[in-house]
Length: 191
Image 1 (cartoon, rainbow, N blue to C red):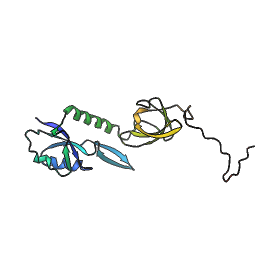
Image 2: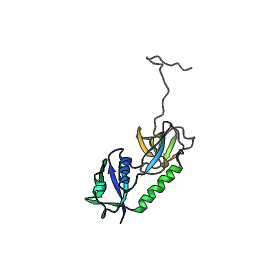
Image 3: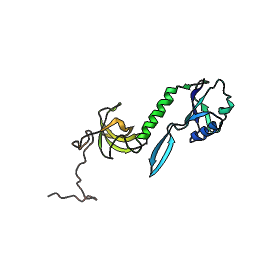
Image 4: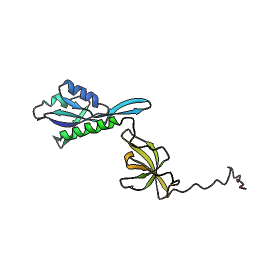
């Protein structure tokens, strides 16, 4: 009976391994996402270093897939390859189609410097400052202030919500005191 199996490849060899296996009449699936980078549209594997093959390991000749250039190993528990359920492959395809339909639209609308509230996870309900988007999958960086120290934190953009404009200062963040000198000890005279 044919099952899906995960294959681990060398870095950036997913498509090459898939092409070689397809020439040997083995069905493969490389989950890929499309993203924009510096005015260019690029496609990259959703699981870098992995792809899936659909094969009956009991009847197939291992030499057809085992010695493929760029292939490291089949994902296994001990020496027994682990089949990936058909439902998982369908779910991956569905989620990637969903992401492709949202192409070009972010799930959030934050600008650097915006104050955001963390909605989920260990830092739930804490305020942070939005820094930047870090990945096409929706990961972002925020500056979280705790114990008078700012820490850069990577989090899913969907776990954030914008705080109203009424909040001007972050609680726990020391406010900037007014400048007292012009430099080199020259005092500023206030009238």
